[in-house]
Length: 193
Ligand code: ZN
Image (cartoon, rainbow, N blue to C red):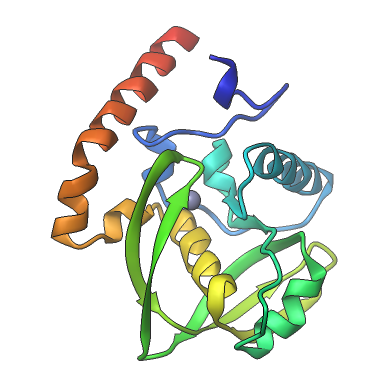
């Protein structure tokens, strides 16, 4: 059971856990508790070698995400230039206010859906609006892995997982693994009682 339990207070919720499909509420105020949550999320994300984590994944229905995206060989957007040197980064109430018509397809994974990977098609570039823990407003166009990761994490805030965005074929391919994971999550849930 140790694998996905994350220390004293938080653990990463797995596929099948109800909290992952519910919409999260805006963070009204960045107080001590929100800062503590963000640092716990960062700790868990690093523990499991993730590049992004959203608060619902640790059971908190708040619009808060943490990112730690590696630097690419070259930037393809202003947002990467601005944000990648600032990793790890916590974003409060992030919103996607615009999307490119151009799309990109790339394999995704998720700490809540461990060891399952599948290709997801998303807008190649998105315009992000968010604030930092210090109240700074960030507005920028984000492409590359950053743009993709932002869309994946903000999906979590709307109760959506990458496996909800697959083509029918890709969906079929992982169906068996997903139901096995769901059974594990259920078993763990009952064990915890
Ligand atoms: Zn995820």
